[in-house]
Every structure is written in structure tokens, then in C-alpha cells.
Image (tube, rainbow, N blue to C red; front, side, top):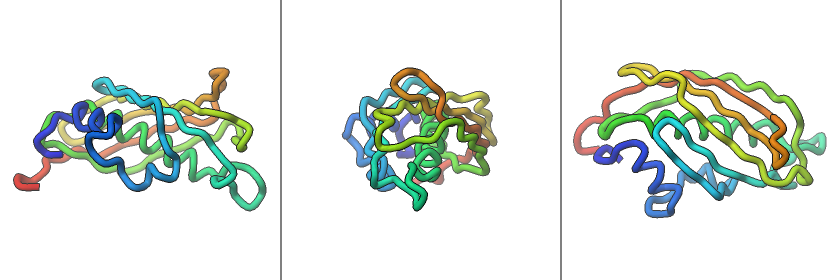
Length: 147
């Protein structure tokens, strides 16, 4: 990871040349793309994502949004640089069910500096309707040599 530019690292995960983070097994992303500062991927909410009241749990959207924002930031970082989420805020606009169908998560950087980065993300349905959106602030740091 430390030897690759961020966008190359993210693309390698999306293309299956590097293993996906285990958390992504819960959302099974597909049709993924990455450009510097912008990532997008699709997922299908299902019954396995339901909460006790019969709709998709907010944690599903949180995984998608946090991942999209973090990967957008990662895609804008040079080799030898990493990040970690300091905070994020989510707004849920429209609930999801197993009938929602494929959703698109897109993350975009707002600002990437030497010490901090900010990004935003949106989840939309197949008709382009906004389901949820979020913003984040991440700490940017140098990855120690040999990692």
C-alpha cells in the first residue's frame, strides 16, 4: 500500500488485484470506478441488511458512505500517505428495502491537504433519487517506511 499512489491502490482493490477490505463483504460492491478524488460503486440492499422494524439498517448506508468518502480521499493521496476518519455526518433522506434495487454510492473530495482532507458522498437509487448523503473529515498522515 505504501508504495502505490492512492488511485492505483483503490483501482487494484476494485479490479480484484488486491483483496477488498473484509467490511465490503457485507455490501458486495460491483461496477466500481476510481479517478483521482472521485469513486463510485453499486450495491444491492437486501433482506440481510434489515433492522428489527423491517427496513434496511442505517449501518448499511453508513458503510457505503464512509467507504465512498474514504476511498475518494485515498484516491487523491500520493504514495506513502494514508488517512483515517476523524468524523462523519450522515443524513438519511429516503429509506431502503430489499425492493429498492441497485444503489449507487459516489464519493468526492472537497479538500485534500497535508494534514486533513474532507469529502462528501451520496447514495442514489436507479432513478437518481437521493437516499442518503454524508460529509467527512479525515486525518492525513505519512505511512512509516517498511509498512
